[in-house]
Length: 459
Image (tube, rainbow, N blue to C red; front, side):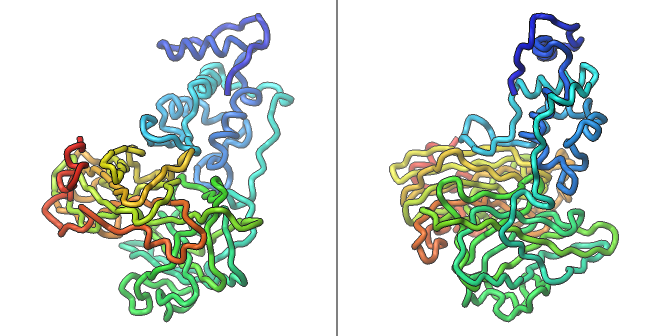
């Protein structure tokens, strides 16, 4: 938000320290009074904060009203001036993203000046109209799919990943333009996915609806071709929109939904019954929005007591496509993640680079699609801290391998692409390559394992 001049009279400036605070004081002085909540702060909160900071959502406090927000004024200043909030980790030098959550300098100055000036409410007539949120959702759903019964969770100990098959009753082919996945028990659900299981799939064909299965159970089978990731829940992710480029997700008639759940014990017996909300397209889209697991390092190895371990994964495009979204995935030892493209010409380009925070597993929507010509190698480059300097490290004295639990590690990046709606099996668009095909070593694999023109251009 840009503060506008409301007259030549100037009130006493907010007394603060440093050049940045001095700028805040000058901007506050542009008003015929102090910076107020109703006129100046509330529009910023509506645009950037209230989607999480409202009753029933992920944030622990609400910023819908002055009464709710006022006690947090000083904490808000600290959070925004340090850029801890809103959470956003992408390096602005690489890629442009439509969902960039960073506050502008002017917005930060507004909140800081408000906190320093007494955090006043201001005139009620200055308030913008309230944002209308759909109760319980980040969108207005056309269909809600809920687990048919509670999943029982133990008070303590490890909870293995759960897979719950849910009958969806899709009477016809559907194009989905948005999805929102919400936990029934936010304390117990760390993250989850909703996966389309098309009719005729062998995956979980012997499973009973509503029963929580674990990987390796004979009723599970192997996830087969034709599946697609329909929705995700991670801290800070929110509802997902698939319509930006005249695109949508495809759900075949007769499909079911598999809820893939990562639970954590809360210290007391608990239950969960999570839900998925969908918004349907009014007409068929020009392009299909398809989500792939991305380059994946099943062969990763992270040695003990190492502060910066590089792990590289790779996949190659087998046809022309366009990249529109990505979401890195690691666990507690993750530090940062980069996506590098190696084009058939040999040219190398970094399209994404970001810090990693396990507590905020964000997704990044490209402002414009990134062309991926056939033969392009998509490289995922991650770094891990397996040392005692990492305060979140479960055990710095062990070599870490791929695994689903938090004390193990993963290295992949969920990626969404725009593809031809008539393509029967979009999973054939990519194949693992390069480092992802190597046997597991003592560490890595690292950039040194890359071959071809990219090896000489790697930093």
